[in-house]
Length: 553
Image (cartoon, rainbow, N blue to C red; front, side, top):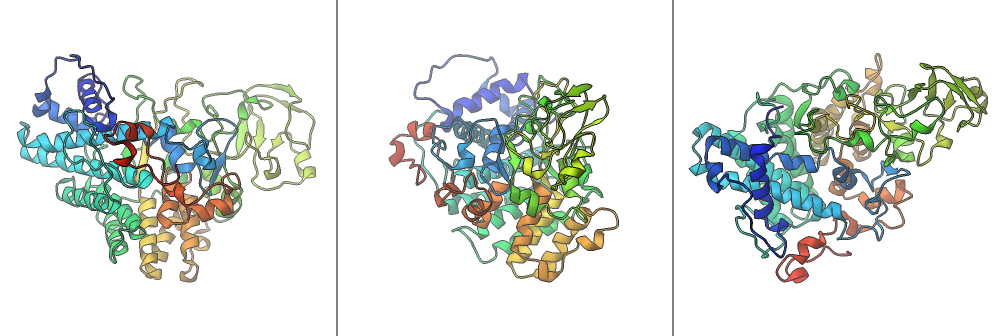
């Protein structure tokens, strides 16, 4: 794509953002001339466009990355830790979760860098020598992005430094705005952006923020606000209105097949409301979309298998909880999403006779290339039945931190080799099924059960196996919060939504204690917020008295 990821001309702007944003400055600043591009470059037609494009790039620090995944899927009811990896304090809620953890500063600094670029474009727009229509549209995009960035920060950290003007010189004067003020700013930015954003499902310059992207985000913001200390009586009704707008006013459609939503060969489709672009070009892809790495089991040391591009590089970071597999994905007769979410079959890619077996129904296996090596049936297949199979069968009683059902949504077989980490998949931040589920949530919260049921059934019907559509529909009597919680788990598993969903609903602690034995002993109410990065407190004039740490850290 040609929108977001410029390199040479944006190095100056990226460096400028790094130097200008207060959250990124160090105590000592050694000024050096690093570029011949002047500070007025942003006022030129190309400079203005380059700056607007650069403002999108900070999204790639959060979406499709290990740090973004760590703060959105670890420590929930649906995922436990696998055998490998660090940053497990985000899962265990133990003493490892400290303000000094580098992921916190990485997300904080890069998000503020994006905010400062947005501020620069908005403030300098009047002097930019570009057509008024383009200028209005770019400013609207910047307001959308600024709101998006602040929403992510506030959900993770609570009250943060609210900066709505460009930070030109380093400063150590910062403070924490109340959440009510941040909500007000986010909503104001998004509503101000609506008239000037492209009023269509998809921009011709794919990747730009559009009016429906802003409306989807507004629906999400109002849902979160409705269960916060800043709530107003009409928050859920407004959330429903904006979600309905996305569903009814554009050309979005649910794809007929759930699995096709994640088809890497067709990433620009009718269900995508807003996506962050990645590419196969190593010069512009940065770290890429790396989610293909983190959900895989250790298939590559098993009989008949060696690591290959098709099956991925398994980092074993996240494995589904028992609750996820046995309750959320319990229905496998009518609902296709268990089958289409988890990989269940591995095909032999190295022939021979092997005795390193985990399946206790056999002592050895003998494979030729193309045979089935491993099958995961998803239920406790009896020993005698397993013994008849020429392949290994991985049953639930044998699941552990290295062997478990593998999420396949993000597998990336288009990588150039089996060790390559930067993936080229776009990351779908918002998709239409999520919009329907937000509408169902908003209607449920306002007591409009019929409308909530209709919205959730749109998603459930699409998920049905052929001939099972009617069986997938729920009745109004079945439409309750538990149904919604589980439905979002089935539809959006692994898609960087769960931690913030639980926070929004106010049941993070309860559900982690019930369904995540690893994290249950430590989780408590303080964990509804992350620690403020210690780097931020240290570089604030007045330290913790001026920029206080969140309680409990």
